[in-house]
Length: 110
Ligand code: 2BA
Image (cartoon, rainbow, N blue to C red; front, side, top):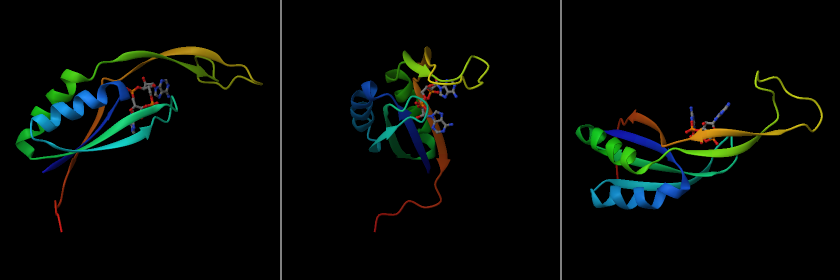
């Protein structure tokens, strides 16, 4: 068995959750915050049999779109901090989805 940890954008989370549930996957939804943007995102924990990992990844790919988002940088393009209160807007591309696929030693319900 594998555990897929999927970090997705809030905008995609409801549709993805429904799509996965309809396909019979077990899903837990967590409200999370990205370290870089300090904005809300959604993390899904999906326990799947090994042979269904590809199917789950395809379902995630089909729903999660990448988007451009503006954030405020406090460093110059070389990554060197700029003094004082100087900051400037930077456009970053977020998602589709960031996935971690972990092997599960045991899956128990007690
Ligand atoms: P955030 O940390 O808020 O990052 C949002 C987006 O900002 C990232 O999108 C990336 O495009 C950009 N970004 C992140 N760190 C950056 C940096 N040091 N310099 C320039 N741009 C940067 P994604 O890569 O699609 O990541 C979306 C979310 O997935 C992240 O939100 C974070 O919550 C999670 N994530 C990504 N990589 C991770 C990792 N290695 N471990 C844990 N969580 C991760």
